Length: 349
Image (tube, rainbow, N blue to C red; front, side):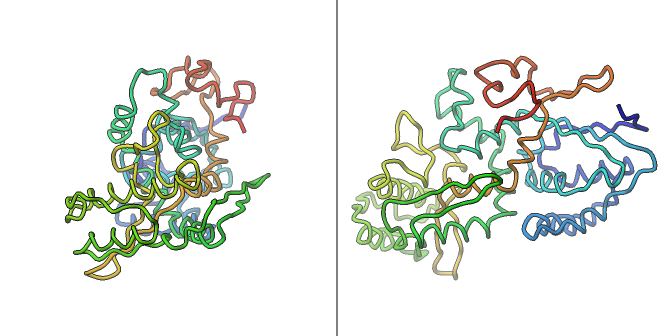
């Protein structure tokens, strides 16, 4: 086993990119001060979208003696840069700088893995807790999964919209992954509602036009046509659900509970795939994105990182693990065991 001059241990970064960078700088493995945050954020965005990590690699300081870097998990949630942090960590060519990292899984990372790989079914992680769907989604709000989602979207929104546009235009799409591809299709043409233009001060006219296009009856309750954005999207959610479920058999644009398919998840995450663009002061555009496209883009960019992440790591006489995950979870068939290969020490394919 390699002998290290020092071991640096960090945990619970929770999307705070500035804290991570300052901490790395304080321990001499990175060049950074808080005034450079915008440059760091831009460099990470370039690494994620253009696969150009030259700038962020230039920030790492080569070590004279080998250094072990131990990250104990919870890279995401609670702050705005969870996937910026992961993008940074996976883009660095660490060994070239005589730094040898070990990335461990945290409970928040586990939740993100479940959520992004199958957003329709992630709630099964909690099926033995006795919590109902309202309690589960309120819990997701409290741990601020939406912060990580927003970080992911900020890095990959253009790619997501491009793929969704192709999907709407062709009604089917083939998406390549590392050693296989997945094919998605729709049972009808959705180009007429792929982009929805709404007059800012006349939401009633918008829904009447939507009704003509889709055949879904407009709401009789005028409160839906008021100025509340939340109320507007609640109505739009139900209409999109009814329209697409009619043809698909299940809905790909909303996250709905298995026990009540007409009830979307509560909170911000429930309509996170409705992208709103202000066109001018009088109108805005809504584009909705299939959750399967979001899941695909996540798998493409972060599947390998999460698949290779370790649950625990034994070095000499020290066992490293994340405090938010009990070792029992590793062998518990109701929690971590179904997706973790104990023999290989990594997430199952």
